[in-house]
Length: 134
Image (cartoon, rainbow, N blue to C red; front, side):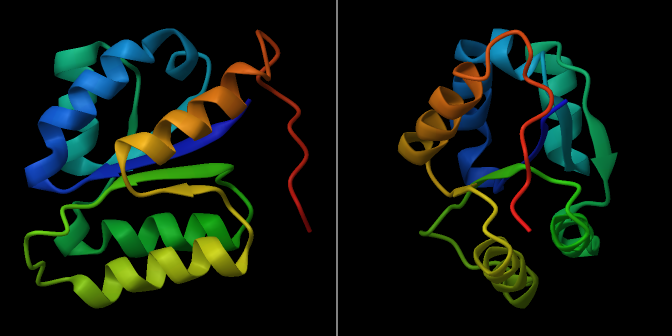
């Protein structure tokens, strides 16, 4: 099963709910992980099953990064609010870097998240067994 990590800054949570609602059918076929607040939002507003890591400022972005390094995440959707400052900016940058180092697809806005959804949708009902790059 494809594992998708989903994170959204507070200023992008409404966009995330709209995007996830539109893509619910594909997302429901994935193993979803998210930072605490994002996981709660996806459960309550979209009705998806989501595993939670810590909140971003509490190390959640780093936890997702560790899973990327371990090859346990197939793609990351991280809706970034570029208009706001974030106290855990170094953690965010580390996660983005790790996705690039390990060739993990990374979407930082709705347009690129849609591209990841096209990729996932093409996997069909057997959204499992997607080979991971080594």
